[in-house]
Length: 243
Image (cartoon, rainbow, N blue to C red; front, side, top):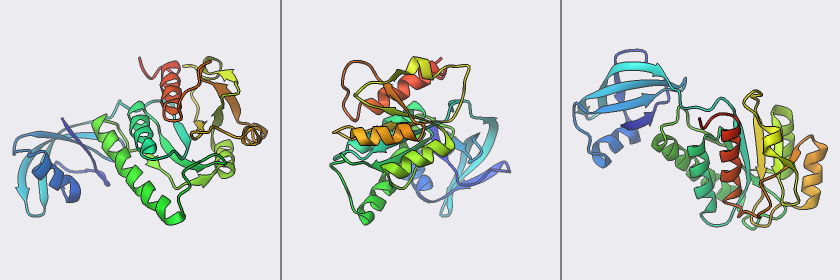
């Protein structure tokens, strides 16, 4: 079933889809009158609808039924991902959204090879948000995870320490996720994943001073684009969100 997100709540039985989504329904998906589509509002309410007409102003639909989405995890995970080279960030963002991440924050750390200027990073964040939207539609999420503006490593750590439980994954070792995550204890979690070169020891020590816990993903060294997906998968599993 086609899955789209609206920027407003739907309070009546009739609704008109406009803009890019309307064009996508008509031109790309070649949908017809009578076909069904699900519209998800900012509150996470699914509106299962039937297309009634294509007009110059958009695609008119009739709401058949409504229900609260059940796809969202009951644990909020923010991924602080140090910026990767090439299209690796695109891949990480897409898969992290599929796995249930709540927010993604690009981070500039000491070992980042990719260090785009302010104008370039703004454009990248805009593209990454579109990737997040597409992934949320494909995986039928109840919300579109936010891709936030890039921040320095120090700012990222301070933000995480104020708003959540922080976990930094470091090749130097740390606690097992099995000891840190459980179904019985739901809390906001922030995870830190390094770039291709990992983290400097000074960064890990700074994070620990701010209350962030060092954790391990096992004895093998994972690539920078593999580590966040492995971490998210384990967290979702241990928290009961893959049952």
